[in-house]
Length: 142
Image (cartoon, rainbow, N blue to C red):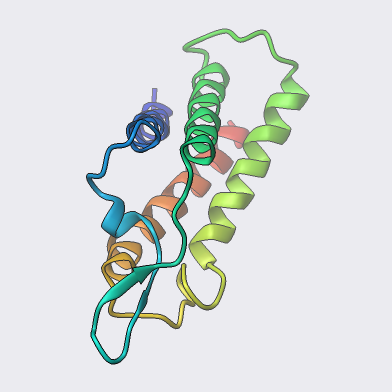
C-alpha cells in the first residue's frame, strides 16, 4: 500500500500536465525555468512548451502511475516483469538525474537563482524528484 504515494503524485502530475496541454495557465510561472533580465528584473521563460509535448509528458506520467500500481498489485496490466522493471528503473534514474539537474537552470546544482521557478525547484521539484526516484527504487526492491 505504500506505493499509493508515488502513484498519487504521478497521477496528480499527469492531470496537471493534461490541464496545461488543454490551455490551462495556473502554475506555469513556477513550472518553466526562466531567465531573469538584469535590467528590468523581469522573468522570461526559457521555452514555451506546445500542447502536444505537454500532453506527451502527461501520458508518460499516467503510464508510469499505472506501472507503479501494477507493480504494487493494485492493477494488472499483464506486462512482462522484466519490461516493467526496466521502465521503473529508467524512470527512477531520470527522476534522480532531474533532481541533480543540468548545472545551470534546474536541480540541486543550478546556477540560476532568484526566479519563481528556481524557488519552486528548491522547495518543491527537487524534493519531489528525489522522493519519486527513491520510491521507484524501493518498489523495484520489494
